[in-house]
Length: 190
Image (cartoon, rainbow, N blue to C red; front, top):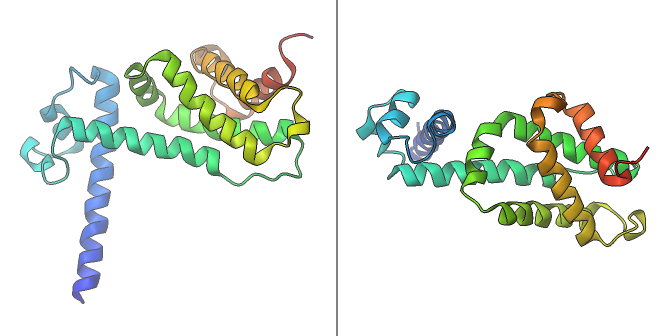
C-alpha cells in the first residue's frame, strides 16, 4: 500500500473518530449544558479515556466550537440545496422549511444549547441573513409584496416561534413546513 493511500485512510479514520466524538458530545452538552459537562464525561460518552480525546481535540472548548461549526454547516446546507424555480413560491418555500425542520429535529437539543449561547436578537439576525440570501437567490422580487429584507425578518420570526412551539406542531416536516409557508405567505387570517 502506498504512503498516500495509508495517509488518506488514516485521515478518514481520524475524521470519523472526530465526528463520533462530536455526536456523543452533542448529547452530553444537551443533557448537562456546556458549563456542567466535563471532558471526562465527553470522553466516556464517546468511548474514550479522557487523555485519548487530546489526540482529536485540544479542549472542551474546541469540541464545542467544532460542534457549532458542524451544526452551522448543516443549517447552511439546507439553505444551499438546489431549488426548482419552476415550482410555485409556496412549494419552494415549503421545501426549504422542510429541510430546516429536518435539521432542527435531528439537532434540536444542540440547536437549543447553541442558541442559548447567542443573544436572542443575534439569533434572529443570523437566521434573517440566511433567509434573505435564500430569497435573493430563489424568489423573484415580483413574487413578494414586501421587500425581501422585511420578508426575511417575518420568516425568521415565524420560524423561531414555531421552533419553540414544536411540542404542539408534531414532528412530520411536511405539515409543519406547509403551515410555516402558509403563515409566512398568507398570515393568520382565514
